[in-house]
Image (tube, rainbow, N blue to C red):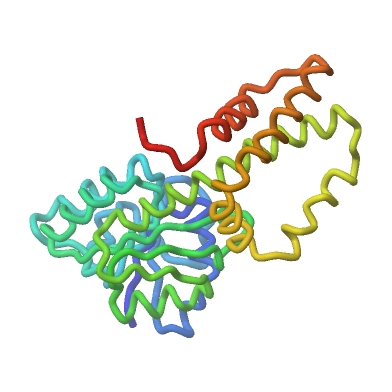
Length: 261
């Protein structure tokens, strides 16, 4: 039976630990988590270096410390490390590339696995981007999660992390715009009518809508920019300003597809 090390059992790690049907796929998890949390009935180790003999190690620590944790855990014994390391952390593209090089130098294959969404919402089935080629065993484990997979076979480590950052332009931009719009809707007492105006998003595919916005932007940016300026006038008459919407209006004025300065 293959042994799978779980390095870090916070929200993401514990979701995978408790959600994977280990017996069904013929694998046994072994967990390192420094916090005093209940991980029963799973076996745990006192030091991360004890995971070095595992067939696979899934890394779920904070992205900012991932490289250091991996090097500290598996750099104590010369050139010997786990056979395969799957890095699920939010470490950036350059960080994951550096970790991959170190792992390869220490006898471990490395796969960049990046989570595309919020585990709190999607749970074990939160989509994944995977740069590299997981082993057959690693592939079976990932498939057991039920998560959809963007397989970037042949891509270098860091490619999955990079595509997530570009995705974040849309998701984080939507987040701050949604917050700004909600504040304005509340100030104008729009109530449930405000959310009902997004029914086209509920019934259509988001990627179709997004691609349509991009493709039609050059021909319609002037008209759409006028709507933003009208919105600024509306909230301005109510004594409100918005640096965020000012920036949106400026972007329409300049055009999104302009040469980089």
